[in-house]
Length: 262
Image (cartoon, rainbow, N blue to C red; front, side):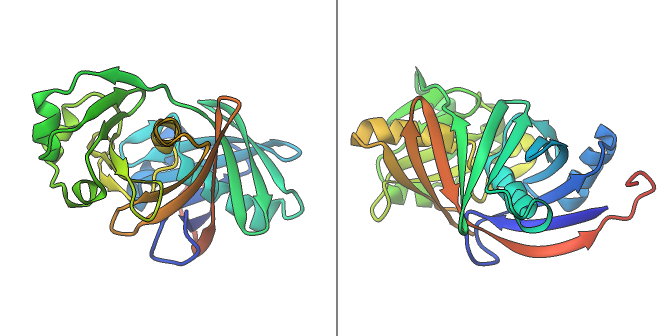
C-alpha cells in the first residue's frame, strides 16, 4: 500500500505540518489504520477511498485514534489526489465525519471550505492559568478550547504543563493573540491525542479565525501558527463558512508492507 508524506500549509520541506496520506481502493480495518497512524507518529494520517467522480470518503487518525476533523491532513490529501490520482480535477469533494466539503485547486494553492466552530465564552479558571503559565483574557469552547492572550510574545513564550492541559475541556487547547506581522498568531496543543504541540492546525482555525474576524472587523484573516515548524493560513469568512487556503509540498513516498494492506 502506497503512502505519501506531505508538508501542509507551507511550500518548503521541514516546515508546515506533515501528514501521512493513503489513497485506498477499498477500506482496510480500523485497527490497521490506527496502527499505521501510531507507526507514523505524525499528528494525523489520512485515509481516503474514491466513491464517485471527484468525490472521496475521508477519515483521519492521530496516534491516539480516529478524530472527527483535521484541516492540514485534508489539504495534504487533496494535494496527493490532485497530483497523483485525479490530475485534471480542480475541485475535490470529501465526505467526512464532520460533513461534506470541497477543496478547490488554484495553481499551487488549495482552498478548503469548512464549517465554522461556535464561540461559546466560558469563565477563566485557575487550572487554565496554571496549564499555560499566564492568565488568559478570555476563554471559548467548542470541540477545542481557545484561550485569548494579551500579546504575540505571550503566545510565543508560554511554557505549558502537558498534564494540566489534559485536564482542561476541549480536544485541543489553542492560545491566540493579535499578531504583529499577521492578523493573529496562535499555538495549539493536543496532549489528549498524544500530540504535545501541533505544527499547523487547520481545524482549530475554524474557531480562531471567526474570533479575530469579528474583533478586527474584517472577513479575510491571515493567521500565523508559531510552532517550531511554523505555518501560515489564508482564510475568509463567507456565508457562515470559513475558507482556509494554503500550499503543500511532497516530502516522501513509501510502501507500507502489511498482510492487511491488499
